[in-house]
Image (cartoon, rainbow, N blue to C red):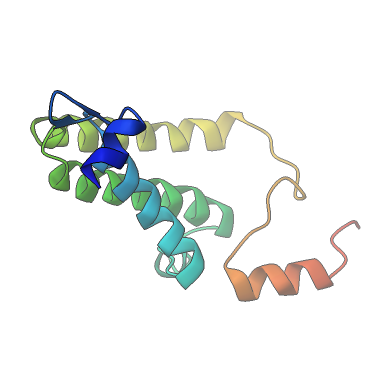
Length: 126
């Protein structure tokens, strides 16, 4: 495995490329979330509009993936707090964007797998 990693330039001087583990873990968690249907949106739909819960859910899921990935990657571990705080701060923009950005009702598919199927079957172009 070491030779394969060195061949692709992922190991230099016996050290794994900084951020490599972070990248693998982060994207793997996102892919696993998509394929398993695990969704923060289902919990958030109770308290907000569907599309807002989708935006917040995707953002929080990303921050959680960043947190786990940065803890597992020794080269990123010291950056964990900054990564998490940096990932959470843009969530503060959501109320401003909600107030000042106009979205059409066809702008985004709202909901989870079951809701998307229902949305696609219904006529939303009144």
